[in-house]
Image 1 (cartoon, helix red, strand yellow):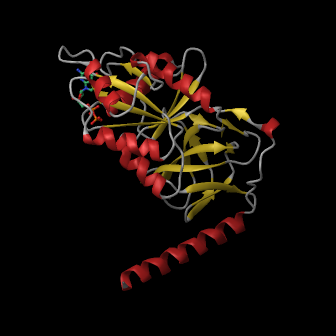
Image 2: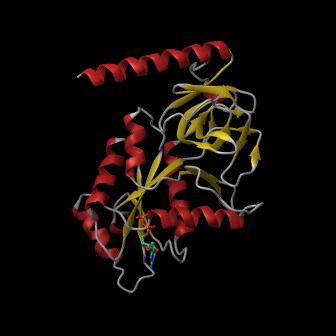
Image 3: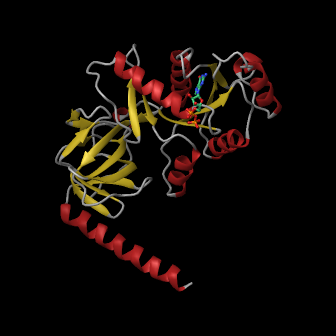
Length: 297
Ligand code: GDP
């Protein structure tokens, strides 16, 4: 059975924050995520080509870690929330300094607020001659969102996702904000977490990117995610590097599931393989019955 017992406080250890990047189209979400991912590889030990696996981890110079959901925009955020998955600890909301607070910026803000997730604003494109970060901060102030250099409590950082200006500082502010959340998890138990994305790879079979939220996932563990299950045959990070075990707040691609679960599906490790398979079968039946019912209506 899965063990989702209440953790003893002494078993809890600080875990890295899990961050989503949201904002209006073309304001620079993808550029920022790409910059952070690639910069980390340059600073990191092994290098190599990074893949979009839906999530990645960065380690800063001082050893602190941040996990990023690599799907920009709030569609992924709301899709996961709709499935009951509360994965994000913190939201970076990107606003282009040569534009304004736009409809999707406002949407992103209200999504983060509805989820109770703190916001750090990244005022982007400050390398542009037409950039006016103060105008953005004024617009935010008019929405009752006072950033720090306007005397408020909300963190914001002027950045350029193109040149990298301010990105390090942005990440430091994210970590500062995360510290206040006192994020903790017990690494010394069987793992659970959430599926970020999954697909069928021609050569490797089903590849599922999951975010471990508690416990430690190991090769050989029997995993059930949504209606799919299987033994973890291999785990890889965004660089394709083989990993033997993954603790809390680690995004990881796993091989070995018998299908592709959906983004937002919870995953659990089962000690009893048969029990996991039975639950998977039951869930599949339930889904079929539900789809028959909706077809009738
Ligand atoms: P998204 O739709 O929010 O993901 O935005 P993108 O990352 O695709 O960026 C939209 C456009 O803005 C692209 O042409 C980027 O090259 C450009 N861009 C993004 N960030 C910056 C920046 O900091 N400075 C400049 N000059 N251009 C940027």
